[in-house]
Length: 360
Ligand code: G6P
Image (tube, rainbow, N blue to C red):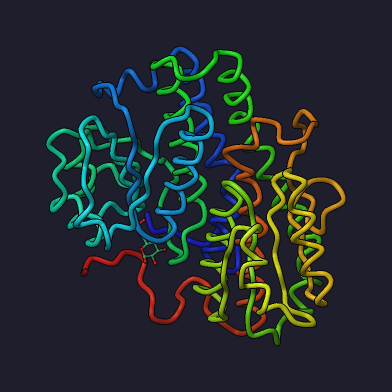
């Protein structure tokens, strides 16, 4: 059967809207196997001492989110490789390689895997295509189960990769006793909340973003700031904005703002801040504010876009925050799409880009 937009104006709209259902499907399938370690044990992989994350584009960002969970929750040494730059990387023994690709056919990734010496490593593919070349080459495969994604800019597959990968990561940390059971319970509860959090984020974003987007149509450049895995979300937000609107966008760790990028901020410069609950973000916001920058704060209650933390236990830097807040990606996707549409762009088929790039 051919795939339609199901009453949506474009595939991207449909795929953004599908995210709560995609998350629910994955959580229902995987969450019961996290706390006993069986999700990980079933992959039948040897013990690992370190992790290397590898991928391109949005898949690389998804991998960085999973890597952030492994290092902050399990103290696992994690390295990230951009696939097109990975050829000379030195692989230490007992490395778990997490290779992420929606299509499983991206040439940069497949070539990197071929060139790296993986003889003492194990390779896990996190892909939306279990019949792909990547899946065939991997020792084990985690399928994302996001369904076909038609929009060139990845949305639901990012969410699916992160949830799948975090579930597997939690299970691995439990199985290897790198994580307290009580923490694992908390993070697994957090996973189960994702469908609801994503649905809430979609509703809030559609309510508050249109008027904000209308005010920035003529802005030539956009800045995205975050902390911890919020930096990764900032990167993903900037990538979506570039892909869809053809405007310049840059992402930075909030603390780095004062070391250079602050010079970009002028009266009206849009600065999207992912507030994951670390109070140090307020200082960066004040720096932007003092220069007349236009702050769009994506965070908890009282933020410009209050999508973070619905139904979560309160408290600063709740441990559960440390692999998210994944729901903050939703307003970033919707912001980029709304801006692109207002500028007359084709959001499903941005210029110069392809869904799957099978040349190096
Ligand atoms: C292309 C797409 C991106 C995607 C990247 C990686 O550049 O336009 O949206 O993130 O490839 O694709 P993959 O299939 O490996 O996830």
